[in-house]
View 1 (cartoon, rainbow, N blue to C red):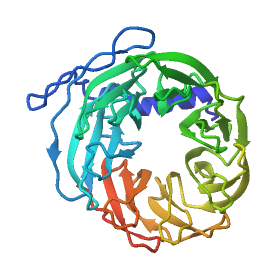
View 2: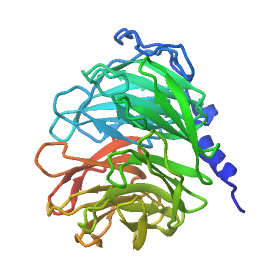
View 3: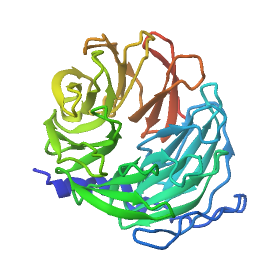
Length: 410
């Protein structure tokens, strides 16, 4: 049976918002929560943020894996409490919350904080939206036709949630300064509408619709990256049905060039960027789930790519992250599969090729990956988000491209 773009999008959205199994949205904090501070976002003007919601207290946690809410799908990292250690934020679609884990600097996390959202939060980004020098969070509420903003207090907490209405079924969003005024703007991917919505930061708590960009059928995963080295943000989005990547190069006048497209393997999912061959140009790796592989593309320095080899991974690959996992100064890749439930590390050769290490069985549906030096030992760790266990797993880097990962669940 052929699945239309709209049908495919509806199926994805239904998975995220299935109302019969979701708890009622919380609009106030439990009695142990600190009071909600006043938000700098006003309710005036077009696309104004509106509504306020409570903030639950922190929960002290032991050694990992670390349990998060239902159906985690994405992860971002930043130092939310300014202690020099990396923290994480994860949207949990079926439990309608964002989970924040504060890092302990030893490869684990000190506490977990949970914040209520609207329906179907499944993507998140971090930026100083209000200009106070503290990282804030932007969350897509796929089932509520809105984005939510959470203002960081610089101590690891977030308060003053404000929702930006009128963004229809956004499945991903990024913060970027497309008009070059020093304030982070937003771009949100409306999958059912097949378009990117651009929202300009008004500087007074409002985001004004600044235009739209048409995308292909069943668009999936919006990212911002400087593809051509001009220090202007560019946008990349994949098309699950067209099997293409759509590229929008940013212009100095705050607009974007006409779309460029490049064909890739079937069902492009997560992507990773790096200079695979050492020529100073940004290259790309993309999970092509329909091929069971990761595809490598060589960048031309102008926002285009030349297709290269594919490396097999297993059934239904999804997560992908780049990093120097063996300490040789050359970028490597790590990829996870959801159905085969494996983790594969591919070591870069510095010439654009990779050598895959034997895949490791995880026993988990690892939906996305993140890498960072969590314990400050100079070697990156892997963060694995398990959709089957609703948990965060970490893998300590051994320095040879392998990781010591604890797979038993909370």
